[in-house]
Length: 145
Ligand code: FES
Image (cartoon, rainbow, N blue to C red; front, side, top):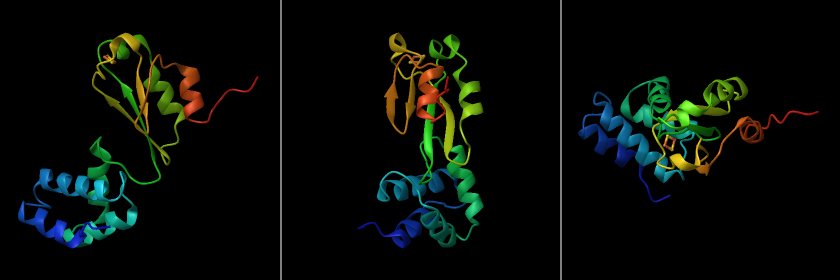
């Protein structure tokens, strides 16, 4: 990896991290990109140490920032736009099916494909006409008859 964690920490500290939320998020996004799209607990720990904060502080920022993601966790994004959100109650079902230890469920704004909705993304892949069967398939909870 060409990315230098200590150099990145120093740069974002100069931008106001850890006091400035935007600088912390920018650092985490940079680290995530350098790590191939997801943050490992080890990298979060090193960033926390570099910033002089607890790991739990950075993990809370990751949890509250939709574009950030921890390694090993799937990301299920449900469109909650005016069309998709009105047509189904996928959020309630998703939250009841998904194991919070392995899947992050979040709502997004309109995915701009209203005609094909309800839409969702699972680990970045877009699915149209989402329904209960698709959710069960993605989350590995197919019903057996
Ligand atoms: S409301 Fe879901 S794509 Fe527009």
